[in-house]
Image 1: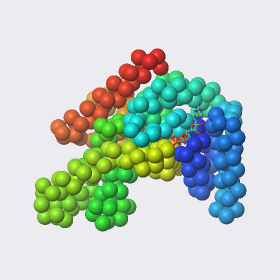
Image 2: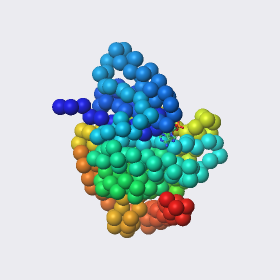
Image 3: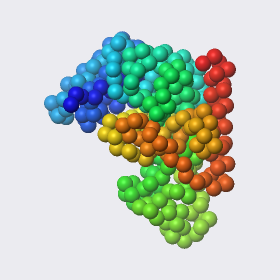
Image 4: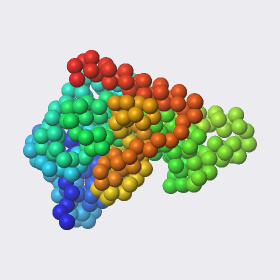
Length: 321
Ligand code: APR
């Protein structure tokens, strides 16, 4: 069996962690592309020189030439600027749309059969643009947001309840912005509703609600919380890990059920927009979008989030992308 080839477009903070995680797990050989001269070469050399210590045989190549991503199986895109304190993800629209357009043209040219995972922000708009420029089928183009947002939500729940995060299942749907929708009603610890566990912990339904609301709000603002602390950029360890979970699901045909930014074609009463929803991820990429029942309140929140995505995409189109 030949090794899988994974191209990483963008060799900054997330690109570096992605390279190391792929090497440590020996998921395949890596081509790390960046427009900055020598930087991706330096980063891959640094990580590769630990191959003996870490015990991996993956080839790691840094490059400034798109030709080197030829025939990649998976492409993970982080090219673009990250947020600085005080910025919203949407503030990155114009700059990152220009970058994404050129990335999509080159991925289409050199890796036309790849599965593509996009991390660049504003996420939902960037995935939409990539799909439009590349013309790739919908199952091959997806965005990473929900895996991370759900991991953040799950972490907060585990810390609050003092339980292993491995037993927490909690999901975040909608766009990757302030309107995202952490699904409280479905959140559970090994099948037990989180709300019931909170009510028992505090012996007070109102207090339990208050604690959950705080976790929901923290989840929605979690990216900004990290940006504020880092001061020089945005989160990079957790987004990289989240994209790796998606890549592993594709490479291993795992049929994982993950919340991903996927093209909706009638599901959830949305047509033609990329939004975060649960989907089965396997060898064919986004193999099936799973529809779950949302109650009135959840539907209202989801619709609000979809509307935010729509208006961002319309802004982008008005700008000529
Ligand atoms: N092609 C390829 N790479 C590019 C291009 C381009 N046209 N333009 C910029 N880059 C590279 C930069 O040179 C930089 O090395 O993208 C890299 C981005 O890295 P960082 O600035 O460190 O940003 P990072 O933290 O990795 O986040 C990347 O992911 O989560 C999102 O909001 C975040 O949009 C941002 C992206």
